[in-house]
Amino acid sequence: MTVSVLLFARYREAAGTPSVEVEVPANATLADVWDRVRARIPSLRREERPMFSCDRAYARGDRALTGHEEIAVFPPVSGG
Amino acid sequence: MAGLYRIVERPIDVEEAIRAVAGPDRGAIATFIGTARDHHEGRPVRALEYHAYAEMAEQVMRDIGRETEALFGTPHVAILHRTGRLTIGEPSVVIAVAAEHRREALAACAHVIERLKEIVPIWKKEHYADGAAWIEGSGSTPAST
Image (cartoon, each protein chain N blue to C red):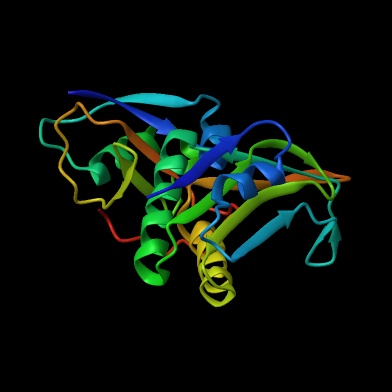
């Protein structure tokens, strides 16, 4: 399935685009999606602390996807 | 639950946060205003830029409001966070919490800013005379919901 992944802050700058589409097997997890994203964007290859969200709520890498979620990956937050 | 939770792209109206929580049965309004500081770890900062995942940020701010009400019994919470480029001294975030008494208003307000810094998907970029850098938090993963 093809999933679209929103990127924010430094990850968005690194990618040069607000979102990327990646191809993953059915029932793939967020961690699988992140692996594909990193493969596409070389400067993110060594990122160790990505945060994931699924439908605008934090989710862990082992979350299995249906392909219909709004998915985002981003660095640790620093608002305030 | 009453509340105001918003990402704003224009200068924050501090009074808007206060108006959103004020009421005749409340004897205290605690506020916190975060402002753009002109230095970071000894290095001069010329401007700040905030970027947000606005839709999620507003949802997470609302969750913090709910959590704060559960902990302190204070349903009247407002959180406004700015995005875009800020000049030094401008407010980046305004929090207001109203309660019957000062003690819970102050405690709840402190809780809100701590949680905001931990979990709301907003990022700060510092601009220096000779470049810019993203600031990133400690990265402890929040509990999944």
